[in-house]
Image 1 (cartoon, one colour):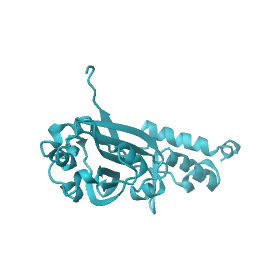
Image 2 (image 1 turned 90 degrees about the vertical axis):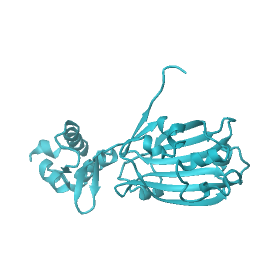
Image 3 (image 1 turned 180 degrees about the horizontal axis):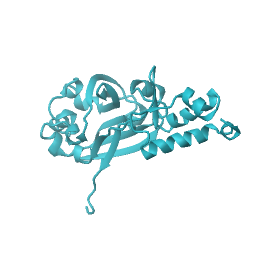
Image 4 (image 1 turned 90 degrees about the horizontal axis):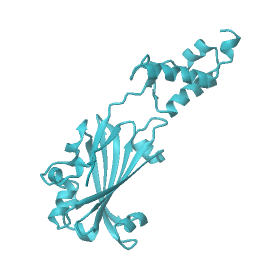
Length: 251
């Protein structure tokens, strides 16, 4: 190409590719021109072509597949519906809270249950002395073998000792149904959400593509007496989820 093309920088190349993605010219799952294609088309060196693709990777628009190339990211959302999933009519009827969600539902890839000293922040939320033992349930959920969520739940050990909450399979209705049987029925929940970049172990465990943030949700469950009985820390692959919330205008 001529002098004009020689002045093309990585930002201009990224802008053009982004426009093709946004317009649908490059559809979800379509292969994106590789470094060699961009070098030939724009007359640039490899570092410029690579930086252009890195911009789109960091924006979460494209994903590199080892040995195959770079592709437009496909988004098939898992729709997480709140507060429907936490209503007693769901888990109180022996159903999983996942049954309130719409569309794809992740599968549990395994549950680890241990008893350990409560982290300081968990002890604070559960109104426990620092170092008090808690039962910890760690789970990873996946869709079509692709991990999409990590969940770690904490319960005061002295409240759930001997119950199915200390076992990998909590039975119909899950942990909330078991808490109700123990006399600690959850009636109120508080969720805090934020978006952040993943820690390295989260990136590896969730198999996240470059530039993909995570959604962190911290949910606390309370009894009618305002006793906090569970802290659940969830880390979601933001490229896999839509969070839907329903509110009444009154009340």
